[in-house]
Length: 151
Image (cartoon, rainbow, N blue to C red):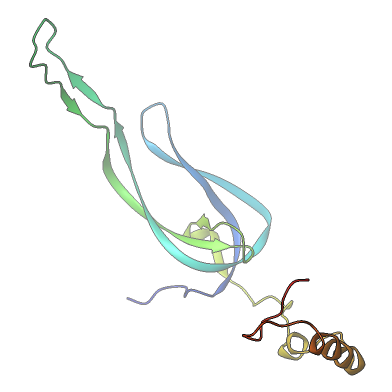
């Protein structure tokens, strides 16, 4: 199956899913937030969320002075009616992933703000600064294993 997007693609997002909640009829719903203008984000994954009706927990008890009291506990569960796949996108490297529906994003150009390798590999130190730092550290006290010692 060919996917619409790949991990690492940049998309333009017009709406995202804030959270899932249960309405008055105990149906699991989506809280969707529209964004105008759309923002750029990078796809970091996908997830599937189940939608349906929430069934509360129940407990059948036998009241009385029974020492062998054994409640029949029924845990809460979700009666699944459908499922939906969401793209996980991030607006920045350290941000939490945001769920986005397929119809709320479209492929975008990569951002222009990108560091070049020339900038990453260069420093602001001049050669004289580097030589001075090497001279200072060559005279620093070291232990028998060659590690610098605190004074």
